[in-house]
Length: 385
Image 1: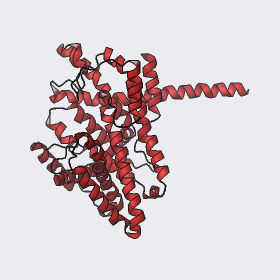
Image 2: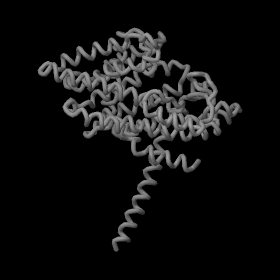
Image 3: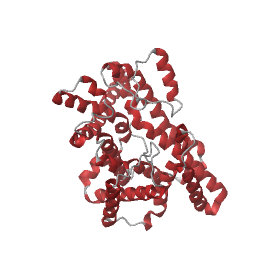
Image 4: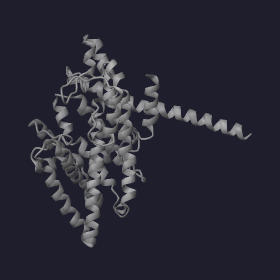
């Protein structure tokens, strides 16, 4: 078991801080990612509360917005280079995390971390050797594999596929539009997003429609990068956006990009814009006026993938505490993603642990690697002597 977890950290760390990273570090957008990942953890831990519905209105959209802002049109001329980077930053981590969690599946079962498949309501069985091989191969397809404790990583496929569609649209626009490429891109994004909003005849096909909507959300970030100098960020407007989001929450408006739940499409776009504007304003304000908080959030923003992938697993530590306090049966540990009782306040503990534990794991791994590198370096020096 120890070897399995050690192997996990060795393979994970290489990719734990590179998601949506950029050559020229933008601290405001790193802060946006940090707040975004905190909201995602809150959303997963505050189930059955208005807070969950509130953060689901815009928390994932933030990341697609950031990806659009970071999208460099220069890369349109280098398709192979663009997709090579995205495979390294999104597809490879997906494979690594997927295979590791498949290898740990039976251990998770023995530890009562798994029990019932939340999607199919079927009892989860141990994996035999053939199951491990088949499911590992399914990981390579990038969308047919599902491990419950890695459910949040649908985002990697969503971002990869959305960026692929957006890149293709941008590439075509550049070739056809030339001097008017932005107009063509706007039109094509609007067409594809409209198609994405149409309910597919077969429910399973929704996973193919979703990238069209995500491409539209990515374009929001790209538009902001183009017109950033003309868009003023103001706290009163951000408060107005917050009020609108709270009203939508009060009327129980549901949005879930991963599950293709948008409600009224116009309202969805308005809410997405409101959420992005609010987060931009808050992050910009923190960056300029609260240096200590900005440093901490910037640090969290650099480790979003680790948190995204490991916070469900980290939740189990809080579940153990609940089991001890309330004398729940041990099989409550398998509740997904959290024990669904007394969530009105336990989400605070889940969120703190869901953020801190993955970061600590990353830091712990850093120290191990530094130690190993130091030993190897000393060995080489002695060998040369």
